[in-house]
Length: 226
Length: 395
Ligand SMILES: Nc1ncnc2c1ncn2[C@@H]1O[C@H](COP(=O)(O)OP(=O)(O)OP(=O)(O)O)[C@@H](O)[C@H]1O
Ligand SMILES: [Mg+2]
Figure 1: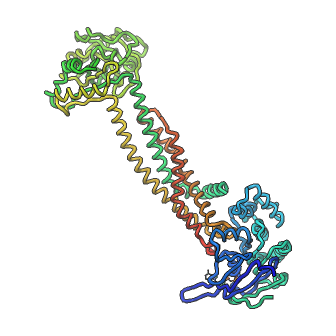
Figure 2 (figure 1 turned 120 degrees about the horizontal axis):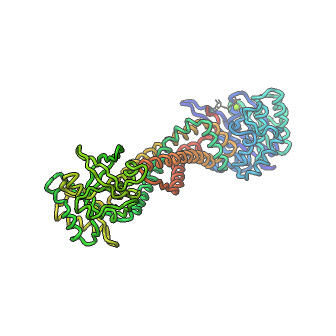
Figure 3 (figure 1 turned 60 degrees about the horizontal axis):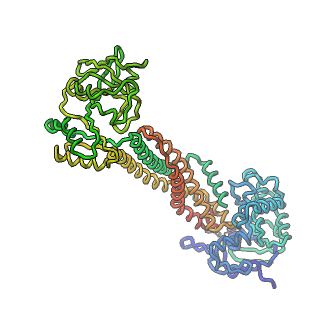
C-alpha cells in the first residue's frame, strides 16, 4: 500500500476554559491516500474546523502525531511548518481570507513570493492559475470589488498556485448561493481529477455525495467513515 | 520581496497621513536638530576662517578693562611706544578711540562712528583711499581738523560723489566742529569688530585734545612683523601688561581668541540642539514603536492569512521591520529638509556664509533607519510570534 499523504495518529485537541476541558478533537485516527476526495461532515462544534487546522499545520495537537507525506510534523519548527504550509498544502477558507489591500493578482502571487520565486515567474504562474479558475480578466481588481464566488475563486487560485499536493477547504461554499456553490464544487472536482488530494468540510449532503469518501465527526470523534 | 513590502509600507502611510505624520514628529525634530547643529558648526568655523583670511593680517587688539581712572590712565600714548619698543615682533601699534555721533554736510546728516586713530592706521590695516588720501603724521602732530570718510559715510554725505576738500561738521556734546575732508576710503569688508565703512576717521591727537578730553586709549591695534608668530607676540604683550598694569585690568584679543569665542557660542548652541536631538530621537523611537504596535494589532488578521499561506516568522519579522525602517526613513528625509531650512536661516541670522555638510545628510538618513530598526524590532517580533489560528480568528 502506498504510504498515506496525510496520517493522523490518536489526535486530541483540548481547550482549557477554567475548570472546563473542551475536547474539540478527541482521539482521531485517519489516513488519507494520495488523490482521495474526502468530505468531512458533522454538526456545528463537532471539531471539523479544528481537524482541518491541524492537518493544515496551522495549529498543533495536544496529543498525537500528524504525518504529512510521511513527515512527522511534531518534529518541525516554525520555519519548517511555514514551508509545509506554503509548498505542500493549499488552504481555502469559508470567509475567503484574502489580503484586502492587494488586487487579485498580487493575492495569488503572495505564496510564490514566500516560496522565493523571482517576480517574472510569480506573475506568469499567478496569471496562469487565475486563468484556470476563470478570473484572468479580473486580476487587477481588489477583493472588495468582486463577488463572493469570484473571491472564492481567487482564494482557490491562491491555494493552487504553488502546486501543493493537498488542498484543504473549510466550508468553501458556506458563504455562497447554491448556483455559485455548485460552480465552486465543479472547480474542486476538476482540481481532484488533476491528482490533488482534496479534503473538504461541508454541511451539504449534496456536496458530500459527490465525494468518494465521507468522514462524520461528532463531539470530536469519528462516528462514521465511508 | 523587499520592494513589495516597501510598497505596502508607503501605501499604508498614505492612507493614514495624519497618524503617520504625528508619529514621525519626534524623528523629524531629532534629525532636523542634528542637521542644524552640524551645518551651523561647519558654517561658523568656515566663515570665521574666511574672515581671518579676508582680514589679510593678524591684528592683536589690547583694551583696558577697569573703571579705576588711575589704572586706566596708564593706557596712554607712552604705553603704545613702550609696547612697540620693548616687545620684539611688534611692527605697528595704533591708538584708537571712538564715539557715535551725527556728522553733517550742509543739510545732509550721517549717523555713525567717529574714530580717532594715528596716521599709520590705513597702511597698517591695508586700507586704501579711493579719493584724496588718509591724513598724514603732520595732521596728527598739529592737531589738525581733518577727516577721512568710510564709504558708507561718504555715500550719505556726498551722494553725488566728490567731497574731498569740503568741510563737514562733527557734533560732540552740543557743539559742532568743522573738519576738512582729506580723503574717501575704498570699501573694505569688516573683519571681527571693525566695521571699516561706517567710520569717520580723524587724527588721534585732534580727537583726544580738540574734540574730547579723554585721558586713555580705548584700544590699541597691533600689527606684528612679517613672519612673526602672532600668538607668541600676544603672549609677550600679556606678560608685559601683567607686569605694568597688573592682571585682570586689560583684554587682549587676537583673531584666534575671537574665533574661540565664536566657536564657544556655537558649541553652547550645539549642546542645546544635541540634547533636543537626543530627546526627540528617543521620543520619536517610542512613537515609532507605538505606531508599529498599533499596526500589528490592526493587521492581526492579515498576519494570520500570511502565515496560513506559508509566511515564516522570519518573513513576517522582515515585513514589519521594513515597514518601520521605511517610516523612519521618510521621517529622516523630512527632518533633513527641515534641518537644511533651519540651519540656512540661522546662518543668515548670524551673518555667516552657508557651508552645508552634505555627508551628514546620508548619515542622518542611515541613522533614522537604524532608529526604525531598533524601535520597530519589538513590534515586528510580536507579529512574527503570533499564532496563525489565533491571528485568523482575531476580531
Ligand atoms: N480557541 C478556542 N478556544 C476554546 N474553544 C474552542 C476554540 N476553538 C474551537 N473551540 C471549540 O472546539 C469545538 C470545535 O470547534 P470547531 O470550530 O472545530 O467546530 P466545527 O465543527 O468547525 O463547527 P462549525 O460547523 O460551526 O464550524 C467547539 O466546541 C468550539 O467551541
Ligand atoms: Mg467550522
